[in-house]
Image (cartoon, rainbow, N blue to C red):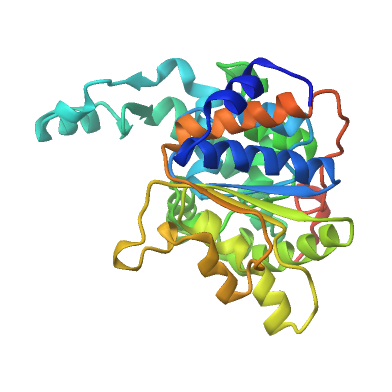
Length: 346
């Protein structure tokens, strides 16, 4: 490994406890890629509003990420940030806000995510108007697409380009769309755009709710992707946060093995960044070994849990991986589920 600032610093100073877990997880990530393996990244929480795209977009460009599973919120919020960044309002003193302060933010159409407020008109409504055109066109033509395919289309067609307020190279969704990266968005319905789509179905603007394809169809796509990738080599799982973004894709292995009765290897690497605990049955805080009992991991799977803030830890791991693999050409994984024109009629 060529000596570089981040890798040298981590290798020298991160020797114990969570620091050692970070170092070991980063090294194992590099080993997986060096061995020709693929990596899925899962994004929970508010990573897009935390501007994880600054590091994740570069990971995609360098071929260090081969698929992403994310919440509907992370899917849309990266696009919100791309078109409305200059209108965001940061509130460092958010812990001291009163209930009336919160009501005032609501009155000014500022939706708070910890210390950052997403502007409704410039972000949410701007994307709503653009994506509604695609939903209505698909509904009229009786065609159906996955949630992310509509947003990929907005990027691939340049529909919103004149609204960009950051360098698009700092948007992970922009880079994912350019790379036609396999993307899986379980539970999209509870996102802001998911709520808007439901409202348009209720008021009759969209006649058929099936115009946006379902989570079950994402699982079918994921099964196809996993089996295809396993034929090429090892497949790893890097989980940022907990929740459905990670819970959904990791169970594809026991589904294939136990329900389809098809033999596939378990995930070949696992790492989760989380500050959740195992108290009260929290699955997000469960230690990786519990996943062995469900057939998701095997006893010899390199497995790590970094109990820390993902906004601090993930960019550091990504920087380590990119430095350690610099100059190594890697092809992105493509599965055909991304391009909106690939789907047929109902």
